[in-house]
Image (cartoon, rainbow, N blue to C red; front, side):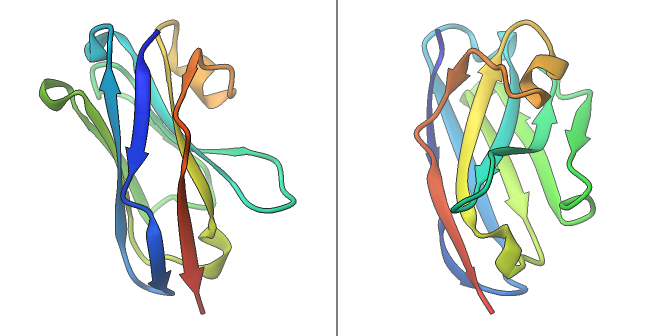
Length: 124
C-alpha cells in the first residue's frame, strides 16, 4: 500500500488561499488515482476533489467548484489541493486518499490508502 502524508494546513482568514500537499511513498505513485476529503466537527466525511492517475480526469464537489483545484506531480510523488477564496465552512480536517482501481472508488470514499489529515481553519 502507498503511504500518504498531508501538509500545508493552517489558520487563515476568509478569502485567503492555501495549498495542501499529499506526499506519497512506497509503490509507484503514478499507479494511483488520488483524492482529497474533509471532515468538519460533527459532520460526515465528504469528498472534495479527485484526480486520475494520469491527471487527465478530475472531479469536484459542487461546494468547491471554481475555488479549489486538484493537481499532481507524478515525478514528485505528490498530489496538491489549491484552495482559493476560502470560507469559514471550509474549516475541516483534510485527508488525501489513493486507490489503484479507479477514480470512482476514490470519490466514493472506498480508497485503499489514507493519510492522517491536516487541519484547515478559516476564520470569518
